[in-house]
Length: 543
Image (cartoon, rainbow, N blue to C red; front, side):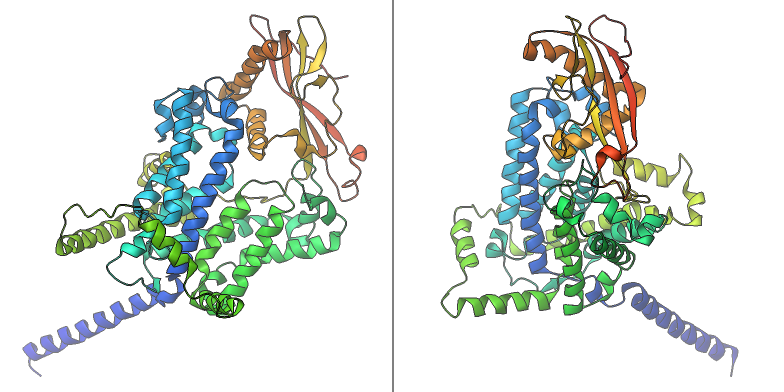
């Protein structure tokens, strides 16, 4: 064989080898697209759920509108900005007018309704996301993991066709809806849920209370979080132990949500939904169970929706001649304008292709920023990413400004909380009388309620009080609340305060004292001392 032929043969072999490597890489990276495919009906169900969650959240926040979101409350704009990430985005930062803020609340609800019906769905999703992070940044002191998870899911949803089914947009579409979609964005939003579960289970493995099964009975013994069926479940500690262990192992093996297919995946999704439903009925932890359930809807594949359709047809027994959902959407769609802006089909197709390319680039960058780099943070290679001025740090700063930085997901982890707590604010009025300014009673350090969760009007107030007890930089959060109480007490009670202290009473909960709080060890801790007006701060010691 001549040298020339050898070179051609070598190049041919090399090309063949590279082709095989590329094919192998595609197969190893993408696997079966069905693993990350999302049924378009699941996207529609998620869209409706997200809109309903937004509306419920805005209405619930409205109960504390003045106290949490206006200058007359305990969280003025200056404090909200100080406690948020530098450069955080919020449309609420541009106004302190209560009427304008209320109007933004109303706008938030209207955009959520637009999202639910699926009219200009992509725009509605983007606007909903911006309003969600705006509201969260307006008061970061009342947030929980539920808010973080919802922001993350809504961010990934921007790049998904939420309006493909069951929407006004679907009525105006030029083509039939796809059965399912498989893309980098669909992979990202599914992995987001799995990442949260697995990382939470990873943290829980550090605690013998979780690995031994005692965590759940102790959590159900906390009077400041349990409600509804929580007190009943305390009477079945063995069931709680097995239930807690089952949940712990479900978290560790949550990656099966991606690997399982069809009805097997549906069964696992049902187990997770059942777990979250039990949380919603027993512990007052805000919207987390509902947000998680909305995310789990995305894992439901075609067999589930086909079974659901067959069940509906069987239940109707042929009485329904037309699809009531479609009929409703047709009537609703007729009321919305069909905007085309004079753009022809070819131009629309070109713009759509450009949009898809742009979205793919943005999603790829977001996946690396929000999922890959945080995941690497749990590996030894993380040491090379810890440069304060490096790209990872800059990416994290940008994500924080948009409220989509990946947390460590330590929900009840690594060690579950095993203590109850309640607040007592001893104060002295101008007559010299001592009172509990937080609970509005004569000064006593005894429990204000048997069910301590009743101390908070809303679950967000409990998160806020946790922020108050931590104080923030230079105790600014505690100081702002103390100033607010001093300035409003006279208007509400006819007598001004001279001094105010803040105490938290902590009760250690054990398996033996779950139903006997009077036998618990108590620790009375003062975390802030305040003087109203020009008075010097003075400690008000407990008896």
